[in-house]
Length: 280
Image (cartoon, rainbow, N blue to C red; front, side, top):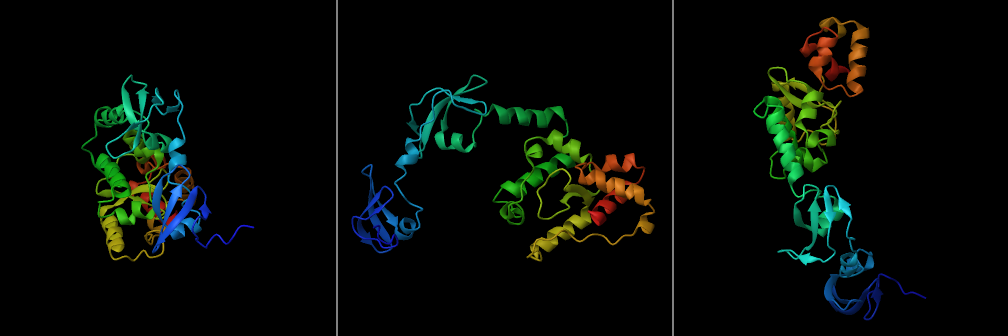
């Protein structure tokens, strides 16, 4: 009968580990492959450490396996400068390159770099708006979601907020969904718990955007909530209820271009923004 797994005795087995001795909170173990290593006792008893990593390293990637644009052309593993395992791959563009085996498995590397260069070329030349407010807004939401050194990261990426896959590497799609920014506006999310995504973003007056940032800095968002909605009534904006319903329905279905909605229903852009903020 197996003894209590929480008791660490000499010669006891934990997965592929065999206990050789104790050194305070750490335990000297030997893996079945022969590797000896100090392991924290709690990682043994809770099952988080079962071997030295040799089993994972032995998981081979066969020649011909594809990861995005990359195809593995050799199963001979090389070691990188930091000790990582590398595999020789060939990109669909013809470039051969050694890539981290771990990066391939996790989907972090899917080209030799040509894909990113193509995206940058499209974003800088095709749309011709690389110095526009919309382009800077697109860069900004990516920085606050993925740049850990950005002062607003802790309120966005640090809280799990991301940029939608359709927008992350495609400014053209972002601009198509959001439309041109009305003068004096900044991008904002309707649901503060949601991502920067079509249907959850709109252009709001700059002063209201500054107010949101001020609240974040004062840490008043201890409990996730949507930003305060302006107090407006149907009478104040004088828009028929059927038009209001149509605009809200269209926006909820993913139409993020406020200018397009305003033009379609013959109202001002500001009225369209107020409606969505109030009724969303």
